[in-house]
Image: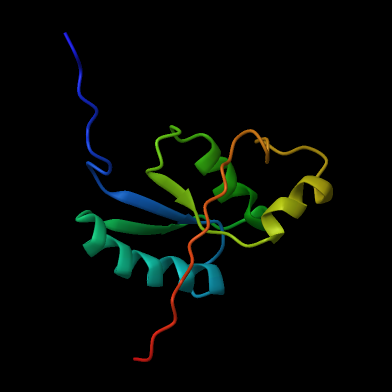
Length: 108
């Protein structure tokens, strides 16, 4: 008996922003979610989890299943936290995979 893989995505995606609403990471996440949702045919929800220099949101994402349904939208400062904090509740290298979108700038 063969099992068939389900098409991805088969439910809503979550963009987790480890900073407060209204900042640049939040803006990028909301901009991407509006453009990506129709293309995927699924909702893309933006969830802000601020605090501890982004570590609260990062810890939340690190504990999610590795199925690409919870995506952290962060900046380069995220990788510096390993040198700023004695102990992190996640491993910056092992618990995350980098995803980069190339955004095409179009006139409104």
